[in-house]
Image (cartoon, rainbow, N blue to C red; front, top):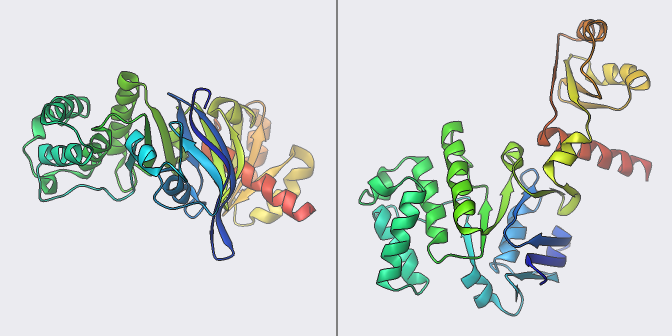
Length: 308
């Protein structure tokens, strides 16, 4: 594996004639933070299900922690933790009882379960809630406990499938603080799947998935830098007409709903700002982010399809 936590070659899953994941190739170093990004239905969850041996690939091969997902499923499962979109907790049990149950399922001794539970409850800010039933916890606390449950056996790779879905912003930020401490203390590989693209900014590498295929990949910083220094958004009731007017003069534009997006190498000057503002009902400029990368990647995909 040459220091790789996850490697995939031509990984494919079809349902009938429809490919949910189509020829995926991955090389993820051990100890890294990787993000698989894309909208709902892009194939993110199917990818995690194949890598965690929950479903069998239709074609291709993958290795997780050095073990084949096709021929060594038990070894793969003992090496990974998985946190799904819906939590795997028993709401009738207490916080400590859920960790104890997970530990027993993973073959840990009573002493190991006590020691690791104490460590994880402290790490995730749940030490004061160990005797509370899960049903009495907030959504953010339940998600933190679910991640702790996935870490009780100290896996080498942690899969997080939309870990903050359904949480409010403060709870989402708290979850990411917990995950940051987890990575710093244990040095594990984290494989994140999310459509909250801003959450992947701290990843070492991200890959954008569309219709089951990777359409762009790289470190977040360089991907964002490719878009220039700022994004100009103009709100208008005639976006297609405005885009056609601006593109010959200002370069590629992107239409999203009632907005036209422009990429700029520098902040727009006062005259250009006034001119652009006069063309729509509102105009603003801001720094680019991973959401913009995704939008412009989709624009490039559309251009290629139309040119074919």
